[in-house]
Amino acid sequence: MQAVKYQADITRDIAIINSVNNKTLTSDEVNSWMQSYGLFQGIKSEFRSSMVDAFISFVKSRRDDQILNIELDFDTLYSKLYLASGKRNVYQQHQIAVVYVSK
Image 1 (tube, rainbow, N blue to C red):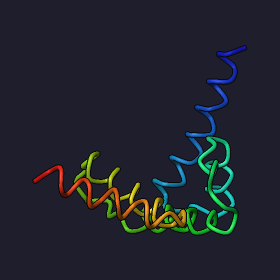
Image 2: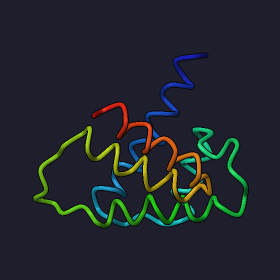
Image 3: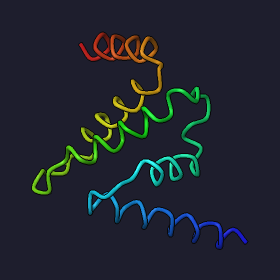
Image 4: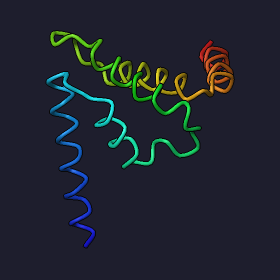
């Protein structure tokens, strides 16, 4: 039964990957995908559409010829999603701590 669940996850990811590659993402598609992974847990409902919009904006901002930098891209996307989640104060405190520790 676990294998069936993993297969369903792969199918869901393939659909979103295709939409990312084609830059044809819709809000409904991203919302459903994020919900399926529980990404909205602890996020107030009024911020969920902002997170979806932030994800779509990030995808559309990427150029096809842009060099892939997993760490930088992840940090950029994470920052956009976190800020869109309405948790700005916590994020800003985290950024200050990171700057302090990195010096």
